[in-house]
Amino acid sequence: MQPHPTLDQFQVFLAVVEKGSFSAASRALNRTQSVVSYTIANLEAQLGVTLFQRSGTKRPQLTEAGTSVLEDARRLLGDLDLMQARVKALNDGLEGELRLAISSAVPSDIVVDALRAFRHLYPTVSLSVTAGTLGIVMDAVINGSATVGFGGFMAAGNHKVVSEAIGHSAIIPVASPDHPLGMLDRTIGLVDVRDETQLVVYDASGLTKGRDFNVFSLKIWRVSDNATKHLFIRGGLGWGGLPASLVTDDIANGRLVHLDLPIFDQNGYPLYAIHNVTTPPGPAARWLTSEIRARLSRQSKLAEG
Image (cartoon, rainbow, N blue to C red):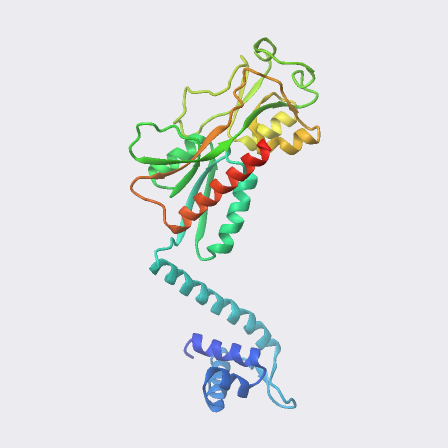
C-alpha cells in the first residue's frame, strides 16, 4: 500500500504549475531540480496517475488527471493556510468563533453592512447567528449560547448580564393601503384601532411573558417574528408596529401606510450590546459592537437631517 501524499509534495506540484517548469520551481523553492523531479515522480506513483506530459513539449503540461488534482491541491493548501491563520489568531487572543444573538429591532441593513465589513477584517473568525425577539436574545446571552447580543434590554437586576447602550431604532405603526386604518386620511385614535386586528410578535423564550408593548387592539394575532408580521401586515391581515428600517421602502412605494397614531410610542427604541459577565467579548466582538454603534449613530444623524 502506497503511503499518503504529503503536503510538501502538493506544494512542490503547485510550484511547478505556477512557475511553469521544474527548473523555475526548483529556484522558487530553493531546491535542486532533481529533488523537484523526484518529488513529483513520487507523488504520481502514490496517486497512480501521471500529472504532467513531459515529452514533445518544452514546458511540462498538465494532463487531465493533473488538472483535476490541481483543484484538490489548491483547496487542501488553502485550508492549511486558513488553519494556520486561525491558530495564529487564537494565539494573539482573537476569537475562533463569534456567536451572536440579534433582535429584529436592530436595523437589518446595518447588521448586513457591519457583518460584511467584519468578514473582510476577520476572515478567520467563524460566525454563528441567532435571530429573534428581545427575550430570545437575552436568553441566549444568559445561558451562554451567544457571546454577545444586540437588542433591547430588560434584565435590570440580573447580575449575569452586562449592557452597553449603542443607539436607537424607531418602531412605527403601519397598515396596508387597503386596510381600514390605512384608508383613514386623518389622525387615528384608540377608538379606531381597538376593534381592528393588531399583529404582535410573541416571545418564544418566555422572558417577556405577560408584557406587551404598544398593544392597543382588543383583537390580537401573535406571530413568531417580524418577517412574518411584515408579510401579514402587507397582506392586509392586520396592523402593527415594525422597525422603520424594515418598512421605509414599503412606505415610499405605497405598499404600506405610516399610521398617524399618537398613542403609539414612536420614540427611539433604545438598543444595547449585552454579554454574559462570565464571558467578556474578545477583539472581534468588541470591534463589531463598535461598528454597529457607529452605523446606528450615522443612520440617526441622517434621519434627523
